[in-house]
Image (cartoon, rainbow, N blue to C red; front, side, top):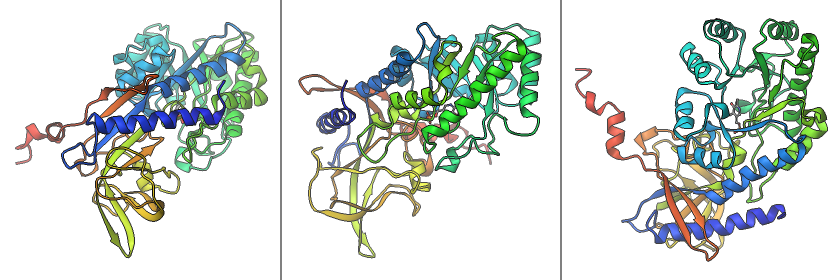
Length: 451
Ligand SMILES: *Cc1c(COP(=O)(O)O)cnc(C)c1O
């Protein structure tokens, strides 16, 4: 097996080849006539992360244990990505009618799909039960809805409840879902909650799963593992009270953080499995089937934004590069720069890595507000008009979570592979949004509606 750094070095070498080829093949460029912005996905990298995930769990689980790795669709809601992951053996975790439609469009079967949103409508629940999609209920009122639906029409869909282990926050509050007052799940440590949960299962023989997701980026592995330990203990308690193995599957969520500081892929899925084995050894005994819901850790490292530097200037003697990559594809970075720093990789107009003495400069996006910056005072070779910037680690929750500020279009996304001879092949995974589409989505056909 390759050492950690080898993975990153291979990926970095593929990335530089892809940048050069993207310019040569006209996907993006420094010349005035070329496209100013595009996004790339490294297909081999995605496959290697999927294999690392399935391999890490397979190596630890008792042989024959049922396991479903459901990709959290919100991390990269693109049909070709979901199909690629399905081809690598993964299913889908969905949290809206749109995400469910994407999973179905990718051909992901109902039996490999999990529905998790905190505000599912009755219609969504009815559809999921009719299709046989696994449902994790969020709260007692949703459970009461499920009571009525299950009474009306028996279902084969596995049904569980999400708990909030209230184990605490990580470093990013907005992504910490296991706080004392989180909006997600049944709060396990609230007075009476445990007793209520056990009773809820005893009263409903069709409740067979338990679900936890303690948060995303910024939640340490030990804290995630602690939430899973709470989940397992509750399942044991319910099964003891039931006198049978009523809870047969534990859905342990996602949340493995990603390193945005370098090309090194850390922490690895294998490290997460080790942390889980230490905290909850019985999880791997085969007594429970497992569902996981990873998103960011499968895709983030494999996405790259490539944008042209349109102009450069100085303001208050600070050099500033005005580029086409900003808040529309790095929304969290623009609004919460301390929590979401991104690297900036400088390339020249031909797509070759740019070298030169480091100069502190701001890297700005195209949007009309002052916070539209990807980096402030960043030491880089002085950027010039026609250069390109690469923004790596953007394969999850960045360009696939477009923000329509200033009617900036969704950029194209191209997958790429590099053959052993160094030839780069691109395939379009999402077309750029056209100006016509922007007008149509903005009520273009309804121009007289308000007269
Ligand atoms: C967002 C989310 C995930 C995926 O989280 P990552 O940090 O991307 O792995 C999994 N499960 C649920 C319920 C989520 O809301």
